[in-house]
Length: 522
Image 1 (cartoon, helix red, strand yellow):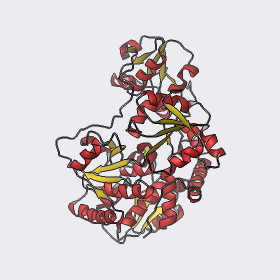
Image 2 (image 1 turned 180 degrees about the vertical axis):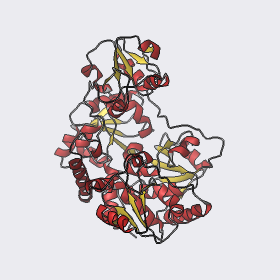
Image 3 (image 1 turned 180 degrees about the horizontal axis):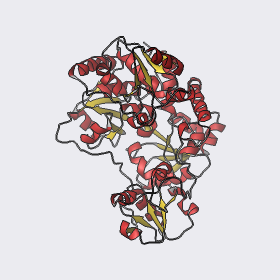
Image 4 (image 1 turned 30 degrees about the horizontal axis):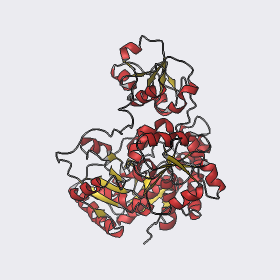
């Protein structure tokens, strides 16, 4: 192990979680083993994708970092690699998850646990009202004056939704509510796939003081499915553009929330000062608008984090606890709503920042993570034309989900950290969605391995066909924890188990002093 990486015991880590200094707690395993058992405050950063994820998750090179695993020896490699990439305060939890458990501290299953547990605490503490799937069906059958708003991403809504539901991702609910719901007599039902975004979305509207009766759909579309009701595939209903009157009402509600939760708004000058201090305080600049708005124009150093997804997956966006967070939008509504939830989750040093979408210093296009070590990667490449004439083994380092959705015909799936053990061929051509991870991996293993220039996207751009399905899995596909509805069998059992797990999180939080939740109840 690198001399710059130290080992700490469980008691030391426990103290660090409570000392008020920044701390990034990272787990080097793939998502499925991480899902089985891990520490509460941990972000999953697999060794296989470390360079792709870690810059955005832990932007400050001097941030205090602790790596762990569960006896897999991956954390040791991850800590050494992170130190080699320029991080200066990297430690390893000696004994990993087992040592933490042996010290009498709790461990958890699941992914995005801080966010999901927070929602359960919100429902318990704030008394967020809910109705069952059967009650909702009865309301539909009677023709009651109702509106159903699906607070997941549009892609999730489009894949499976409740009849009549409109796609209104979490942070959009308050922003678009007045235009969507012209009558104060309409009962509004907020749903998601399970529980988290249903609860947070419904309570956001309640906190905003809308005049309507608001409820969450208990257990979301999974409960709808389990009750035997029809699930819609391919729904496309979206809200209209926000009107001036709708915006005015949203701004009034936002002002009340900003005052209640002490949400600070900063201007360009303050943000520039915070940028200048980013070598001493971790700084996260997150744009909480829709992907379409972000792509049209955003601050060059802002990462896309639609507000509802950010609250749902804080561990994906915010790696260093007690870091500084700036939430960006164009009028303060969505940023303020999102900030109110982050503050209750324990992110204290945060502010909102509004931008004029027409200012001339914005960057257009999708978010592209900075991949550390890529500039120094040195490996031979091969182009698509030459690839079609080679007999070398093609290995795809995409996620297993991406691989199943489409890969170069004949390519094997492999996880980068297991590449040399899982793939026996010597003459390798590596690909990944855009080719960058493949370049890193080819440089790392050497031995004549080549990277496909431009990755699988270059193959697609040539108009060449993809092969679909799990056709040749050299590595076990444990990089992605499948959702219940994605299981190959016993889907209903998986749904019931997931929902029971989620509901029990509130009991686990009652016995755990590591979380920072402070839910407002008045």
